[in-house]
Amino acid sequence: MKSWTNAEDKWLGTMSDSAVARRLNRSRASVEKRRVRLGIPSTFRVLNWKPSQVKLLGRFSDEEVAKRLGYSASAVRRARIKRSIPPLYPIGGRSHWTAAEDKLLGTMSDREVGQCLNRSDIAVHHRRRRLGIAAFPIQAAS
Image (cartoon, one colour):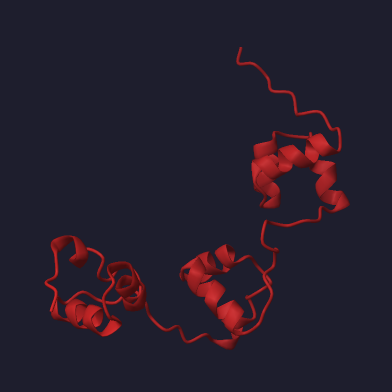
């Protein structure tokens, strides 16, 4: 039986026992046994989703649902995928812009527009440039 090192012990409780086992090349059972023996709580827990919580899946981004419910984004993603609910935004971000969103471009900084639209300032910058809209003029401090 392979002895545990302090470096290996530091991984316990930081992710699921299965994930730690894969990382350390140990069995899940040995990881669980060691974690329990050291009194380290499992950070991985099975979530019992209420119907009102399930209704949020796919209606908001996984990150937004996670923030609202106090779960990790990966837990929300797993729950959504388990229920075959497509993500609000496809991989790679949202692909379509509305006319109302386009009207905001150039009316304030790309960062401010991004915050208003829940988009990255890079995505706003690229969209504004693609449409040939000038950047919002930045006032120099007087």
